Structure formats: C-alpha cells, structure tokens
Amino acid sequence: MTNHLLENINPANENDYLEYTFFNELEDLYIAYGDRKETVITFVHIDRENQVFHFSPCTFSNMSLPRFYIFLTNPDLHHYIFNELAYFETEEQPKFVVYDLENVEKNLRVAHFEYSNVANNYELVYDIDKIKQIGIYSPSIKELLKVK
Image (tube, rainbow, N blue to C red; front, top):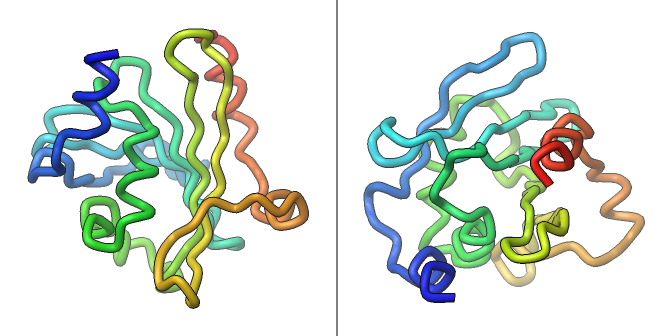
C-alpha cells in the first residue's frame, strides 16, 4: 500500500516528463522514457487515423500507469505527457487509452480518455459506444495477458 501511495501521490517532477523515440516504425510504436531518457516507462502505439494514443506498460517500469490518470485529468500536469506530442502531428486533443494490470489480483484494466471542451480537461469515457469507437490495440492486451 505504501508503494502504491508513493507512486501515485508523489508530486510530479522533471523525471516524469515523457520523451518519445521510435521502437517500430511499421507499427507506429514508440517507447516513452522518463527520468531524462534513463527509464523506460511505457510503449505507445499511435493510431494516427483515429487520433488515439495507446499507452501500455513496460514490464520493468517503476511507474504505475494509474499515475497517468492523475496526469491526464489534471490540466496543470498535461505537459508531462504532452511535452513532445506535437511531433506526432495529431490534432490538438487526441484520445488516450491506458492499459495496465492491477497490482494485487493482476486483473487487466483498460481506461479510455477523451478531451471534454466543457470541462476543459481529459475525462474517463464510460459510454460503451464511444469506447468501441476509440477502440483498443490488441497487441497491448496480448502482452499484458502474457505477464498476468
């Protein structure tokens, strides 16, 4: 419990800034690094056609992906994730899908985020039709199920 709190409640700092590099050009797959490119945080598949970023955890990352929920839902923290996204030539507010395994039971979790102009912020998507429209990246799920 203490580790979970430390991971998710610690204030964001410069080590949290994500920097992206190509991993597989054919799949439009990137690696997102933190800690000044010293720590692999997540794999990112970019669905350019639908303007969706799919974040899947790196097995050895020490950053839990639920921490992304904090970054995406707090406009003051967006720059930690968005700092380099302009290079991907996407619309101003792309959608995000975050994949993760819950720590204790190892249940697969998938969270869809969409920008709300009304709230001026990213919000979790609960509408099943919108979730289907945003979609999933099946290789991320397959990899997480291997780890499970």
